[in-house]
Image (cartoon, rainbow, N blue to C red; front, side, top):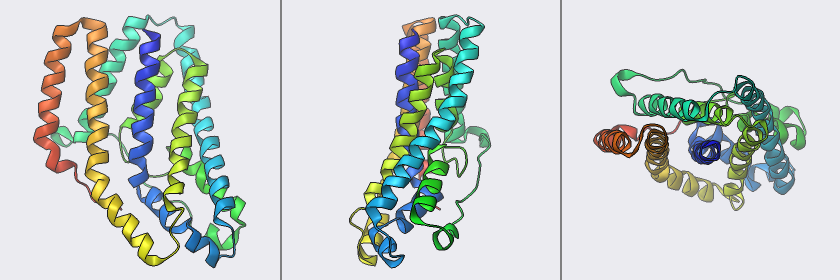
Length: 253
């Protein structure tokens, strides 16, 4: 079942990275690191974007190193796989409750923007790589979903330091690749059109996160306690998501 945990952690990492594109920092990067902006600063956008992606991968690797150490600890205490999967179910339920804000519950969220003064103070490789690292490490700027926390603990529960490391590197890579959405933003009109489209897609991204959390919960429960409890919990969680769907549409910062 350790392979199951790797799959579940990878799913959460992917959806957490995609959802984080709509964080204030993610949207800020899509407004500033564009061909339009870089030409105004007399830099090549392709070079800055490459440094941003490299920085994001490095940020994912930084967080992945921490997750790998935790995974090594899980392996050292010889936590039974069944217990690890059961714990994954519990943590998925907590993340889901936080993202749905059930009863007003919400896990702590880090609220911090990157320092955009770097754009005027440093060379493009410095602010490109620096911004990328802060975005890729996941916890240095705004945390918009509890799936980011869930991703780290699920990676640790795999008990495989190598798997945990590369799951988080993948998270950083996906976050970094979001900068490519701005590849054709050569005018203010194009920039506004992109942000309008992103605003339209936000509810879909939010819904995707909670449905993945529901899936992780149901699969982990099925693997630990059987299909019956999984169906009951899965249906109950799904109904809760559908009933609270209108409350998911939070406007981007």
